[in-house]
Structure formats: C-alpha cells, structure tokens
Length: 243
Image 1 (cartoon, one colour):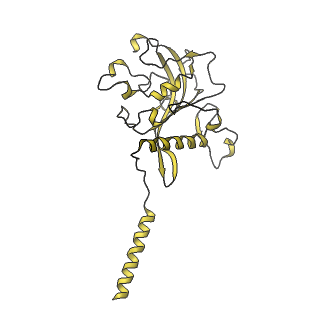
Image 2 (tube, one colour):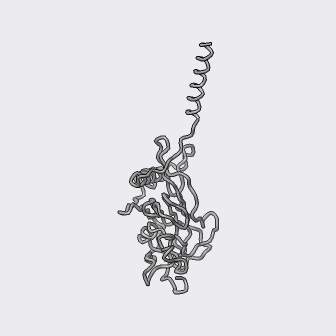
Image 3 (cartoon, rainbow, N blue to C red):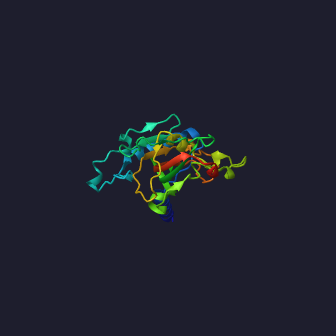
C-alpha cells in the first residue's frame, strides 16, 4: 500500500513539473512607470540593431539566412539622434528635399503646416519575457505604403481638426507629441504627384512616454512605442478650411 502511495506521489510531482515546463510565460505590465520607460529604451535599441533601411528607405529586419542584407548598416549605425524626450529620428542620406519646406508641427500656431504623407506607422509594446526584452505585439496605426497606396493628408495622430477637439477630448487624446517633435527636424517636399513611388525620408521612433504613456487615447495605445517610416509629399501653411 505504501508503495502504491509513493508511486502516485511521484507521478503527481512529475506531472506538476511537466506542467510548469509547458507553461508559456506572459508579460505583466509593470506598475512602476520608470520600469516601463527602461523597457522601452532597451527594446528600441535592440530594434535599431536588428533592422536596416532598404534602397527605398523601408525598415527591414536583418535575415539570419539571407546574405543579401549583410552590407546594409543597422539603424543604430545611421546617425540616429535622440532628443531629450526619448524620441529618436534618423534622416536618410540622399532622400531629403533640397531645400524643401520647413514643417511647423505646432497645431495651435497660425502658420502650422498641413502635411501630405506616405507613411507606415507601426505600434509595438516593449516586453521582457524570460529575460528577452524586445518590441512585440506589432500592429498598424496607418500604412499608406503597402495598403492604401495613396498619400494621406493630416493623419489625426499628427493633427486633430478643431471639430474633434473638446474639453473632454483635447488634442493630447488624438495627437502624438513625439511625432510632431521629430518631424520638426525634417523638411517636406512640395507638390509631389500622388503617383510618385515612395522614397522614404527616414524614421521617427517614439517611446511610450512621448506618445500616450498610460493615458486614455483615441487609438487605445497605452504603453505603446510607435515607429514612423515616411515621406512628406507636400507641406504648406494649413488653410483655414482644413483646420
């Protein structure tokens, strides 16, 4: 009888151990905002080390099996500039307008800029799963390059029209301040035809603290880092009819 009991006990322990081994560890959002910010910073650095810009300026991940991308520089080797807010921008050599139009990204300014853009904006969540810190859970905020294939004028996350803004839903509910901040360092083209194939100007990487952090927002993107890959087809002072 004792032997039977011992066999059952041993089997139960083995089953319990196997069950633990099979469990998939999931990420739990840290309570401490500083931990979140540190995760963002580490994951963004890894992202820049693992990706490059192709000949059209698209962000691509390095392949471990295809040697054709071996001669490309990492994003982290393309002179990224990190602003005090944590926003990082990368200007692609040979893809900037000359001289181009200055972009005034202050939405409250009387000379604020309207933009027409081809853009891929991808949101991520920086996670730490079993010691592996990375940008995960990717999704598209906008993708006019692969999907709509037509430039977009004033995406809401860049400029929210006055009709949408209220005391309940201020600009910060819609607009991504980190994108506005990064775009100030780029100039826009003027009147590029819609059918012009994208030759993307660069990258803006916005950590969650420079996007929506943990605040409620129109896109439900709390704790999200956002990567923008874009070309500004046209910019001008925003007409009153577009405000």
